[in-house]
Length: 172
Image (cartoon, rainbow, N blue to C red; front, side, top):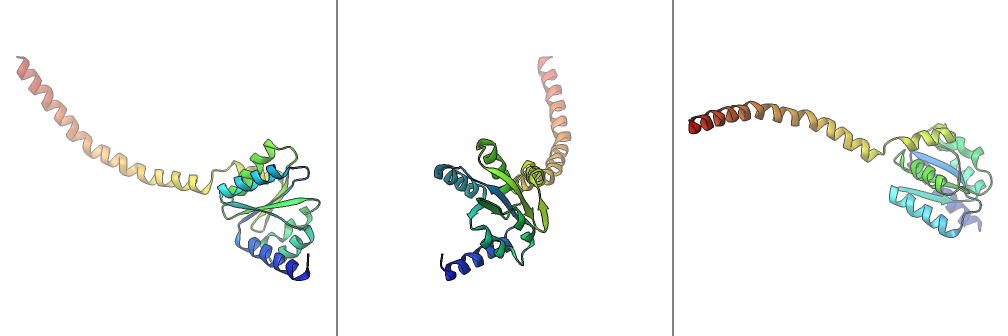
């Protein structure tokens, strides 16, 4: 790699680290090209991205960002998964690690917080941002639905009582 290309790669990685909320570090030694493509595809579908970079360049790119503490995790052939949603990258990484034993999650960072493997697993077990938004909307809408049901209930009961009396009168 030429010096200019290295500088550009460091700048791009630095921008990625500054703009994303979570970075997951994993070792991928022994994965096939098809498996790596599958990982990239799954990450993209979840709204995350995967970067393979020289560890030295990644450590330089981490300087001045919140994720600077993951530098020591960058040993051997590593891949860095990043996402804006704090749950997307960890969830895909943990699921991929379950299916591929050669893919080992080392740790990561969320903001200035350093995560070990258990921390990444804990993040992966949380519902995604979209799921949480759906639950909040459901909680907000539920009281309005209950109010509408309660407002219509007396009228419905009254209609059933009148119908019952009318049916009695016709039967007699």
